[in-house]
Every structure is written in C-alpha cells, then in structure tokens.
Amino acid sequence: MDVPFSETLIQIVDAALAEATRKSGDRLACRPGCTECCMGPFPISQLDAWRLRQGLAQLGEQDPARAERVRRRVRESAVRLAPDFPGDVNTGVLDEGGDAEERFADFADSEPCPALDPESGLCDLYAARPLACRTFGQPVRVGAAVGVCELCFQGAGEEEIAACAAEIDVDALEAPLLRGFVEGGQTIVTFALAVGEQPR
Image (cartoon, rainbow, N blue to C red):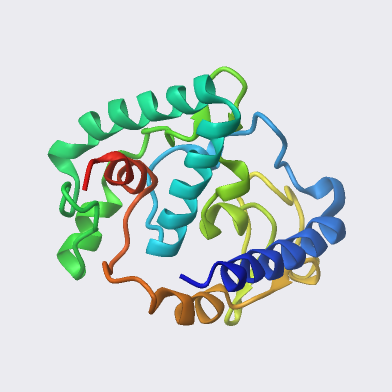
C-alpha cells in the first residue's frame, strides 16, 4: 500500500473542498453537530476501509476509551445490520449487480454511522473519514451535474451553486490506488471496521 500517495489523494480532495467551502460561505449548513449525512450506510472503497481501520488504530493509541466506544458502536451496528446486509458479512463486501443495488437502496436508512459520537454529534474518525464524507455537503461537480447537500444553498439558483462547486474527479484519482488491494468490492463503515477488528 503506497501510503504517501494515499495521503496525497486526501490532500488533493481536501484542498478542492476547502476552496468550495470558501466560495460557498454561509450558504453551507454543514456545522459540527449537523449529522444528517451520518445516517444510513453508503458504499465505500477498500481504500476508505483501510484508512478507517488505520484511524481507529491511531485513536486507540491516543484515546483508548474513545476508541473503545467506537468499537462498541461498531459491534452493536454490525449485529443490527447483519441480517439484512446486502453482501457477505464475513468479508464486509457488498454484493454487486442490479438486484444488490435495489436491496442496498432500502437498507438501514436510519442507522447512524458508528464513527458518529451520539453525544457530541462529531465524527470520532474525522481525519480518516471516507471520500464520500469528505465530498458531501459542499457543491461538487460530477460530469455535467453538481451535487450538494439538500440542507445547503437554501433558495439559491443552479448558477450560484455551480459557481462554488469543486472540480474534482475522485473516482479517477482513487482508481490506481485501489489496484493495490487483494480484496475487492465496496463495503460500508460498520463492516469495514467490524472486519478489521476480527482476528485473522
């Protein structure tokens, strides 16, 4: 695993999003304690999963009690999600294909991310958060479309939103790094951390 290039990817993404945040100003609703985007699982790459496991290990060294609270939430979440998980609970890898996507679309929409501290409303693994978390909220251009959190830019027109959008192709930047992983497929935060905690 080429850790320096992984860190470079994060620096590129964070710099692009910082500029979008600067341009957006007070039109962004994203603030500490706003947890709308922390509810319901979403697919993450194996690189995101690796980064989350590294982040949890570092948290364990810096703040063992806080890391154990994350691990407890991971275990509890895995128990709740396992019966309907649209993938392999042993590996944490999501199934692929149209049927799997349909099952995932209706899967656990109200389940909080286990990295979310329910008392503070903050992410305990913020520095190691997945790319989806890093690119959610601020306007981001994906092809011709611009995505933005529905809580942000209230009353703004499409042109105003587009003028603030980050121009970054996360998939293209991440693809070369994903080739370094033996296990393939996407997972979710709960199973990325639950599988990472299992003895090998």
